[in-house]
Each structure stands twice: as structure tokens, then as C-alpha cells.
Amino acid sequence: MTHNNQKKIAVINDISGFGKCSIAVALPIISHMGIQCCPLPTSVFSNHTGFDSFYFRDFTPYMGRYIDEWKKLSLRFEGIASGFLGSLEQIGIVEDFIDYFADGRTTVIVDPVMGDNGRAYPTYTARMCGEMRRLAARADILTPNVTEACMLTDTPYKQDGWTRRELFDLTRSLHGMGSKNVVISGIPMGQYIGNAVYDEINGFSLPRQKKTGVFRSGTGDIFAAVIAAEAVNGAAFTDSVKKSAGFVKMCIEETEKHDIPLTDGVCFEKVLGRLKPSVSPRGRK
Image (cartoon, rainbow, N blue to C red; front, side, top):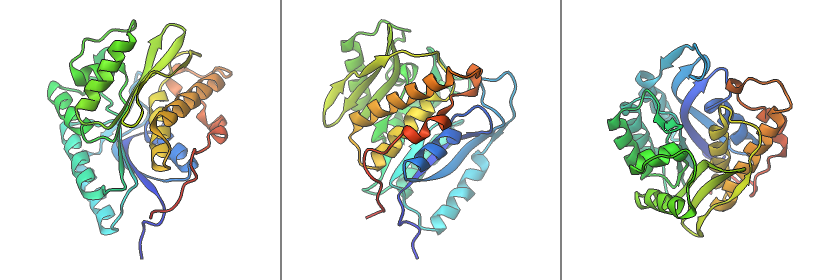
């Protein structure tokens, strides 16, 4: 008996019980796209860290035994997607996970959750940033925001005013580190939001769309989840970026209709039915 007849993505990220981010958004979105989502928690939060108070439990001590059970089942994954990693040790755990579970049919998606608005998150040390570069080099798809792209490449950060040439150089630098496909997400461009893309097949592009609403928690996780599902379903990378950005915009537009606090994420559930996979999901071959 095999457990590998359905396509699967292992999502290595935190669980937040409230606040709609990380695994809490990846699981329903990836499942909706026709792919089995297999969560591997890195930590457990009652609600995410954007709130004034939260309960936190580091899952590092339990990840090894959790993974061992998957090894007993001889699981293989068409996608491995990593997000928030709370310690240096967890970066090594993800690398070992890729070494063991990935094969020639596996797409590795790394969302290097390191910081935002020009600052590293409090959990990130200089050594962790260095180790994240090594993990990023393993990615078939790398999805940093502007802050994280700058951190990974030692590029001075700026809030806005990025030129097309600067963004091209930034994506090329990330590609040169080893990442096959790169998208730098959520770039402010006046009345627009852009995504700088380096596609190993089609090269550089800078798709953008009209800005809507305000920044809300969890949109980056939604963006990365759609890209991961589209990759496993065989969609072209640049097309998946455009679809992901369009879906995030749709979520924000819907959320603006309701009295939702910024910390609480977006009402993706109300528009999830409008998200369709570009390619019909099939079983493992």
C-alpha cells in the first residue's frame, strides 16, 4: 500500500489559532486547489505576533519525532513549502527534510520570513540570516518581500522609489544565489503594487496592479500558498505570480466591505470559490 497516489505539499510553518496567517491560510487554499496539504508546525501561537499579547509554544523539540512518523509512511511530496522558522535549528531541520523527502518531482518553495518594513523580526540573528541564505539557495521558488530580499543580498533597504533596473539586479542576485525562480512581493509603486519576477524560463518581468485597501496580516502567506499550489499543478511561474497577486487583491477588496481589524487578516473564505487552479491536479506519476 502506498500513501503517495495524491499530490501533496508539506507546509513547514507556524500555526496561529487566530489572525489568519501561515498554516491557517495555507491549508484551506492548497486543499481548495486540489492538493493535499500536510502541515509540519514550527511553532504554535494562540494568535500571531501582531497582537499585543499572545501565547507561544516552540515546536522544535517535537519536529524530529513528528517527521519520523512520516518517514515510516514512506511519504513523498510534490511540493515542500517553508515559511516562518523560529530558530537556527529549524533551518537545519528544513534542509534535512528536503534531503530526505524531495525527489526529482518535488518543487521546493521557500518563503524566507525574516522581517518587514526594513527591519528583521526580533527572532532573527545575523547568523540566522546567513543560514537562511543557504536554505534560499535550495529553492525552486523563492518568495521574499522587499525587506527580506535586501537582507538576503546585503542591499540597502528603501521604502519606495525602486527603479526597474534595481529590481532586476535584486532578483538576479537572488537567482545567482541558487534560487531558480524568484518573486519579490508587495513592492510599493505609487498607486500600484508590483511584484519583481525572475523566471528561469522567461526572464525578468515586473507585473503590477492598482493598489487597493491597506496592508493586512497574512497576505504574504496567501500569496505563497497560491504560488505553491500552482507550481505543483504545473502552471507557469510568472502566470502563478499574477494569479496569486490577483487573488490577494480580491481578498483585500472583500475584507474592506466588512469591519475587520487590520490584525485579523483578510476574508479569503468569502472569495475562495473564485480561485481556480490553472491546471487540473492529477495524481502522482
